[in-house]
Image 1 (cartoon, one colour):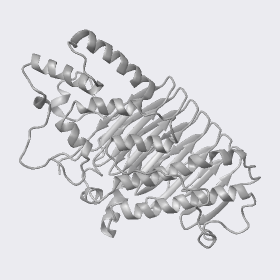
Image 2 (image 1 turned 45 degrees about the vertical axis):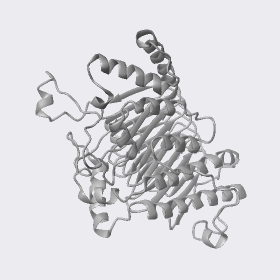
Image 3 (image 1 turned 90 degrees about the horizontal axis):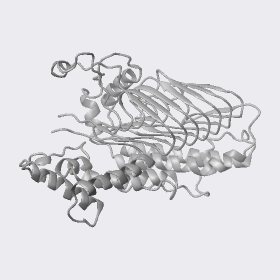
Length: 449
């Protein structure tokens, strides 16, 4: 039976308004009694409509078999949706009513994931005194290089969180064998840069991908990425007070390359474990981590109208075989690239969090809040934004994955499709012109093992 994931796509203010309108229409047209809860209201209306058609609620569910539907990679929320479809009404309401301002953004995203069935996700911020000890930090912070004590404090906290995220991935990332890794590396590398006009079958047809995916612990990966996000969120006030260095500081660590840049218009290329840019209209080109197991990365950009592009490496906030967070605090930014970017988790976890600005997000396949055997989240807080994707995006859940896209406010536009023609002969007969696939905006997709 199908292995599937869960996808969430919503604008908070729009859904809340929509719920009110829906409630009024239903009560005017169908209510003969007043149910006590919104879920009871939805159930009663659906039941009445089904009775009119001579059906029951069982008619909406999958036929019951003598064995469970679930497979190792299938999420419990999918089983619940298939067995009780109307329960999704209550779920959508709870997701919409979650308050993003009640706590940290990491706590808010953890609440959404908990509603979707990712249990025990704990984005606890690391206390201010929880750092790498000086002996361990020596390999990550070169002695005498950082002159600002506050900046050193921030760096030790972030590097500690990156180190912790790497250890979590090693435990929860499916523990691929050398043979499985070789297959995954080849296919993920090809999928990132794929530019064809047909569905790229690499991952869905790869046996090693599903074998490793069945061993992934999604809740632990979610904890890793949200703990990293929580640390990034907590250091923003300190970073805003730090005097920018005259020249960029850069060094290599066991986690990867680290760079601290000032407020000039900088150009960043190549992979980083940690990149902090304090301002300026910057260009980022293929700065995603290498496709190696357990890679972790964080990018923090405080301000400026930035251009983020990727082609050969995973895009911003893409956790492929690892954990990644991209945090942009301010500016009208442009994110454009190939595939697998802007909040994607594939056998890993990734978050792109853009706080303010009128932003443009454009990509190919598996972009903008996508999870496959992992967790991928794109959250945009404010601004009049534009989103464009070709396929599998804007809140897409693939096998064993949680994909979430949230936009909290602004006058936004969304488009998806227009690139990959539908090759199904049966469906092509129904259309006079070319019909394009999209599978976006709250779309879940499974396969049959």
